[in-house]
Amino acid sequence: MKINHLPTFIILLLSLIACKDRQAKLEVNTLAPVEEPVVEQYGYVLDNYIVQRDTVQKGDSFGKILSDNHVDYPTIQSISDSVKDVFDTRRIQEGKPYVLLKAKDTTQAAQVFIYEKNRQDFVVVDFKEKPIAQEGSHPINYVEKEISGAISGNPSSTFEKLGVSVLVAYKMADIYAWTIDFYKLDEGDRFKVIYEEKYVNDTVYAGIGKIKATHFEHRGKEINTYRFEHDSLPSGYDYFEEDGNNLRRAFLKGPLKFNRISSRYNLKRRIKYYGYKIRPHKGTDYAGAVGTPILATADGTVTKSERRGGNGNYVKIRHNGTYETQYLHMQKRLAKVGDFVRQGDVIGTIGMTGNTGGPHVCYRFWKNGKQVDPYKQDLPASEPLTTELMPVFDSVMRPLRRQLEAISFPKEGEENIISELEETTPITQN
Ligand SMILES: [Zn+2]
Image (tube, rainbow, N blue to C red; front, side):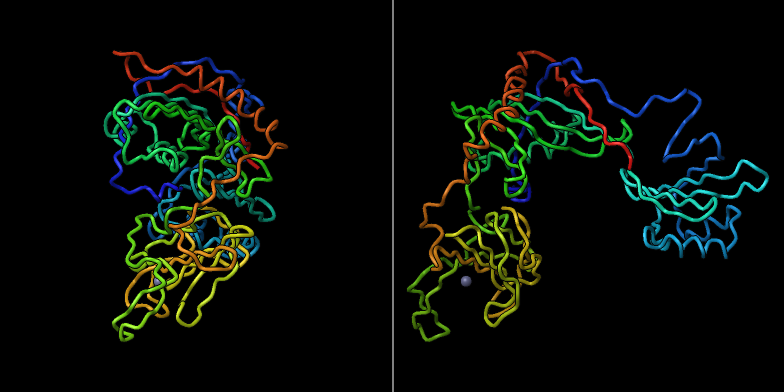
């Protein structure tokens, strides 16, 4: 399950009561140290230039910015033409930061234009001699954090207060979706999480990274999960218990975030419109507003994505040798034949195409080529790890398990502590 399966009213109120400071385990592996006065950024020694940092203003264009900085129009035009494959100079957006490196001479003419596309990525347009554009990224550090606590109040506000993204809670709910009912958590349920936060240039927070391991205690059960990445997994990674079990079920309960069934699978359905003749309904209808995202209920490969007759716009997915699912009457199809989709991916939106009296998605479930009622099936659990993969998994899981065990729960009366920084793995700019 993905975060978007969580009803917005879910009030998983996590109180992070404390967590333990730990020593950094890994050396921070940064770029080679530079002498203090020499500041290098974007691949330039800034000291060699007049550095002008600014933001694209309303009415600004690449041409205007350069022209204001002593570059003539024919040159600007030739720069734009030469770099257009890497950077479309017409695309600069109001509000984005940019940097000009200008000659330290009497002309003070701009020589390099650096455009920050987002917090992480930038483009360097260098026209000192021959104009060249190159994309680059600021170094990103992944800082590992640990949190532990107990369910107690509002998670969003608690997370906010502690500076931990509420996405961490959502992702946890996602991981445990089939084993713990996050609508019915108990006061005092305890948890631990090891996860990463991303920082650009060491300082600018840029969201959460991977959730690496989790621990949850609910109604006397303790369930640990470990993230495991491997090429042979359909989506590249998944979460497993210590013994290699996968917590997910192979299928979601329905194709919408909020599943409201308007018409069930019924082979004996009689419809007034057809004179109360039997018109079997081999699908399950889920009502929703036009435009509501429709989710793939399981991992699989898209085998059909087309508009046809009474089906309207529809998508069909083959999940394995046994199961297929089909989603009808879409407004928009957002998956192509051949796409591999993961459980919970948005594959289209609710519409009224084809033969339908109102906006809904008709969800059809196929077993061995026959349409069946998914609610009468004993749906399979996701595949556990294979015996061949277990040793690889063990080598990833064991250190995480030790790390989880070492995280203590807050004692009564202990002050809230956000979390500690542990390690960073910089990715240097390309
Ligand atoms: Zn239907």
